[in-house]
Image (cartoon, rainbow, N blue to C red; front, side, top):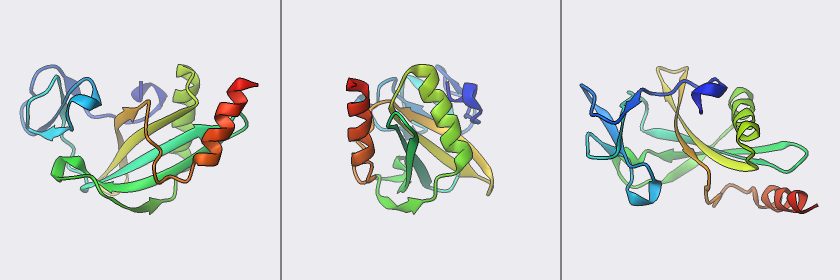
Length: 148
């Protein structure tokens, strides 16, 4: 899905690849991703900084609202929000295209930065908490717009 709207994504398979990998379960609530662990799916490990750029995007019926939280990667310990980042328009546009294709009004997408300018989408969260994003008004307006 993410590749279909123009994001680079790491290779993934149901079998462990050669070299380092990220083990994930099909559903987030079963486990956190684990470096070189056991899981249902195995994703190529990307030599990125240990920071995820967590994009939260809400469609309020008129426009897209986006926030980006920078958080430490769960691959290296407990996730901790360390700040915000300015949303890049090209990322928001791709996420908006994804939302439109899937009929979604809100979504979370995790991106990592490899080699200073190579962005990869590594996670899609169709039900993010939006905690700490400041998007409460946009979420409220999105719900109200759906009820009209």
